[in-house]
Image (tube, rainbow, N blue to C red):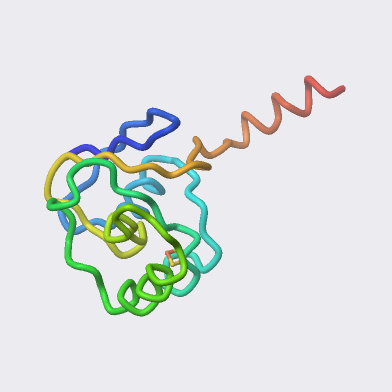
Length: 117
Ligand code: FES
């Protein structure tokens, strides 16, 4: 199944049982995080634009962290906010997560250094 990530328009394959964040990392993408998938920071949170019913139930970490966020952030549907390090998908979904981008490789960094010289 595929996860479309907007606004970048990136398509990432998600395997069964894999979290959205694990899928992004496996595919070579950076995804905002502070706790590196420990379920404690909320930096990985994304808004589900399509396929909300195809995501796993909120985990205890999400209930604890997002429940508080639900009360503080006024949104049309706060249930659309999920932690990418906790949620798994069972079908094609679309999420909104600014800041997702391809990880730079050693070759990319070397090329950037050459351009700077
Ligand atoms: S990466 Fe920190 S809560 Fe998901």
